[in-house]
Image (cartoon, rainbow, N blue to C red):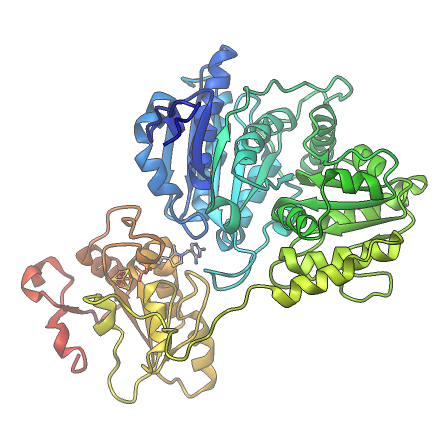
Length: 590
Ligand SMILES: Cc1ncc(C[n+]2csc(CCOP(=O)(O)OP(=O)(O)O)c2C)c(N)n1
Ligand code: SF4
């Protein structure tokens, strides 16, 4: 056997958080844990006594961030990073806002607190008001906020596909889009530095394909960000303050904060040319995962750096999607015969370019295509996800039309012909079902002739089990569509399934609404003592069957029936008066 010239690295799993240099192996989720540890190291080196604060709510692709934070608890403690798994995403956003108020607190015990909010795409929407207020009020100079959005572009484990960029833009929140796990570390520290400088909260996209992937990374040296010298802040600064009552000063400050963001990006470029081809006549602009898809498409077409330079092709990878750093971006496109913009989902970069072309008319390429081609036909679709094979076809056609003698289209077609196929063997596919012993299996059964609405959680699978159960609604909306439907269907009765995790997150409000509207509905609160669908985490506060019963009674609910496999483990005296207790086998009778 041949002896390796390289000694084996004496690597322990905890080195992923312990090492300051050298190589580490990280998942995207672990990189999100490493960011606050690295930020604290940076601050310590700068003589700052900061702390970190993380809050949010689980949901794929960020389903296991909380679990990983709990695992890394000793590292977080050493770095003075506190973690509050919140009751829901909206309340988490306001908790993060509090972290930015610490710096101005006369009783503060630290110089500032950097905050990380996290949530699945629907959680971004749900937290919209909190995040918008937070961004408008701003960050503190030695704090800073990253808003980590778990975006499921392909709708692989969500009720709907999601692209948080559009929400970020509506709140004027800058938006970073890392393409791989290594970039998480770089972009994470960048985002906090940008937030401190500009007073903005900074969006950070964590899409399924990157946050759920893993990578061996050579740790880069800690960054040294440049403070822009050409930006002048207003006399009262850009950061959070009080009083800050409603008025135009908040919008005026947003203008300055946007200018500060662009100044920071100009001084610390996060967008870059990939090949730096001199006098390139063809340009492709990419970001995030779309960039990786494009690079793979080029590989499939046999285009490497040398070939790209030979045919006059260059690529511009955008790190900050909004606001687009205009000088560098316009320098890239100027003089090109054509520029193709490749963005997965909706095209925010392309529309910013097109706005800039009106403001800077001398810096246009001859043509820019992206979501549509020059004839208004769909080119890079916004529906679904992009794939390298699909992009290979698009790039081949565009390059063949722009550069003579390439004949890439036939190569792209042959790729399509030999592309991976899904093998379908009859009987080999299986519809998901409850685990054996799952309490939902019996709890979601219905008396003959009854109907139920499904809710969010594992018990949603009742939809596929011929149980007269259907529907899907956003987390916390359970039963409220029936409030209205029943107004127009003769006040028919329905059962509504509601998991205990969802009850604690927001579902208790749905019960309040249904009661207030006097709706003919029975909520089945399915207590399995876990937020099962996201990994079996505990619910984020004290919750017991007794507490749920008392809380719904306090809302005014008269009829409370407790059904359990182990009725002997409950005492009716611990429940509101009139509660009945039955064995689960008698569910129908109840
Ligand atoms: C606003 C929002 N946040 C997070 C999620 C992710 N999510 C889907 S199901 C679920 C957990 C449901 O737990 P529970 O209600 O206890 O039902 P179980 O899975 O235990 O049956 C979560 C957090 C979501 N869909 N929407
Ligand atoms: S994970 Fe838990 S709640 Fe989900 S199906 Fe399995 S046993 Fe049931």
